Length: 234
Image 1 (tube, rainbow, N blue to C red):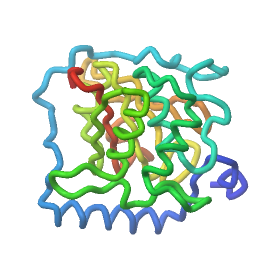
Image 2 (image 1 turned 45 degrees about the vertical axis):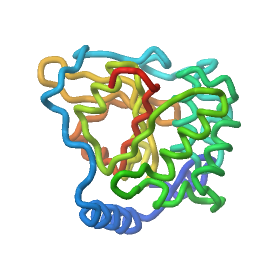
Image 3 (image 1 turned 90 degrees about the vertical axis):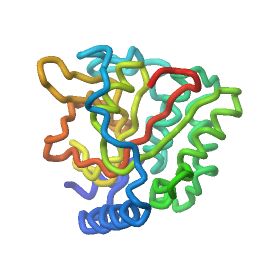
């Protein structure tokens, strides 16, 4: 990975060793919490076997008004920019940049060259994470009622089902296709037709979309964040 590329605005770069340590710490926290995360949902029915949420085209080779506003991923707020895009899609009328700034404060984002702290992604049993609380609280500013839940790893079947119900999913990944470590993509399409297991995910830095599967070498997911409108199916 090019260090010059990593210094671009909006790209979070950390050494692979740091990511491994973070993943190990998250794993320990999960075990200590009694594995209190939702079980896999493979038995549940996905209403569509191929579906793309109509909030972005399949390939973002040109600017799409109202999708991710410029600057695309200002600062190191990839997760928060993704969350702002989801809230806009659900009807939040504030500019994405303002939503992301509100989320920054609510999620304890402070370091100018880092994203939200690791503890923002991990909660105790029976209580949401700091990130989840920030999303629900900021959504309420515009009287938008949502539930947010961040889990460790990727529950693929749950993610595919959420997308089939037009609910994008934030994937905080170890490494993304452009070589960025510890970076969040926004999954907005799913393909489970004929036994396939793929998610279509957008990189807010590059505006490029990629099909991601559980076995994709670069796709190891640290956490997944589900944002659901209150009263919606999930």
